Amino acid sequence: MTTLPDGAPLDPVAATDISQRLAPGRVRVQSLHGFDDDYTDIVDYIVKCTHKIWEEGAVGLIYTHYAHNVSIWTTSGLTYGREAIVESTLHSLAAFPNRRLFADAVIWSGDDTAGFHTSHRYTSVLKHTGHSWLGAPTGKWAVHSGIANCFVKENRIIEEWVAGDELGLTLQLGLDERAVVEKLLGGERREGATPREYSLPERGVGQAAPAVYPPRSAGGFDVEDFVRRSLHEIWNWRLLNRIADVCAPDYICHTTRGRHLRGAAAYKAFVLSLLGAFSDAALTVEHFYALGDEASGYRTMTRWNLQGTHKGAGPYGDPTGQPFYLLGISHHTLKDGRFVEEWTYFDEVALLAQLCRQAG
Image (cartoon, rainbow, N blue to C red; front, side, top):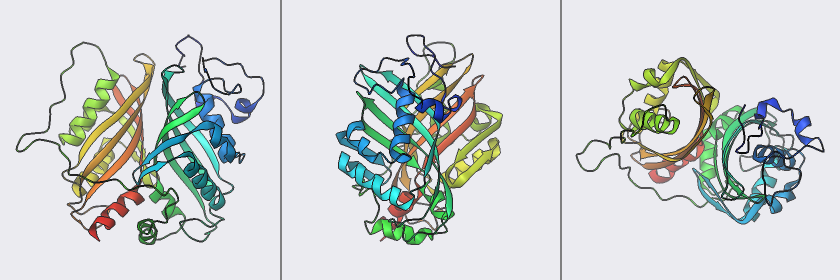
C-alpha cells in the first residue's frame, strides 16, 4: 500500500467502494490546507469531486473547485477560463445524462504547500440520449476511457491536461468518423479550444543522429530514468528491439479504440503503425512522476507529446504531408525492473482533424 509523507496509509482507488468514500465522518489522513473539510487526502479529493460534479450533477462545484483562469490542454488546443468548463460540462451531461464515471487509478505527487499533481485514469459508461456537438442522440451505450492530469492547490484545479479515447467513443455510437471530424473543423467541438500551432519535429540537428539519452551517474534502479530512457530509445531512436528487453513476457497495453495489446509483438506492431504513418515523429516527455518502490513495484505517470508529419499509409488514411501535434498520457506499472502493464490514451479525432484541416 502506498504511504503518505507522514507515514499514514493512502488506500488505492480500487480498494475503496464509492459508498465508503462518500460516507460521513471519514478521518483526514493527509495535510490539505485550504481544501474542503470532507476530503481526506488528495486521491479522495479527485475521486469525490468528480463524482459530485458528473454523477450527482453538482455542476456548480466547478466554481469552488476550479480557478477562474484555469487552463485546460488537449490535442485540440487550449480551453481557458472556468466558465468554459461549466459550459462544456453542461453540454456533455445533456448528451449523456446517465453517465457513470468510474475512477480506475489516481497517481499523484506533491503536497499542499507546493501544490499537488494528480493523474486520474477513468472509465465512463454512458448512453447517448441527448443532443451534442456529435449530433442527434443515437440511443447507444458506450464505454469511454481516458486520463485527466491536474495541478491542484487549496481546493482548486489551476491547470489540467486531458487525453481521452474520442475515436473509440465515436465508433461505439455508430457515428461516421469523417462527419464528426468535419463538425470539429467547423468549430462545433464543445470545448471551443483555441487550435495549436504546428511545427516540424526535431529528433536531430541537420545530419546528426537523435540525441543520446545521458548515462546514469548512480547505480541501482531509477524508475524515472528507466521510463524516460525506454521511451526515448523506442520512439526516437527506433530501437524496436528494446521492447522485448524492457517489457515483461505477459505485457499488456490498453489503448485507444478499446484495444488491449497482449505481448511484446502486439505492442511492437502498435508502435510501427504510428511510426509508419509518421516516420519523422519525435516524442517528448513533458512530465513524469511515480508512486511505489522497487520491492513492491511502481505505478508511473508520463505525459508526453508526439509531433511529426503525416508521411505514410496507416490507420489515419492516405498520407497528407501535414504536420500534427498529439498530446498523450500513459500510466505504467513496473515490477522487477520491467514494464508489466500500460494504459495509454490520446485523442485520435483531434488528430484526424489536424490532418484534414491542414490538407484543406
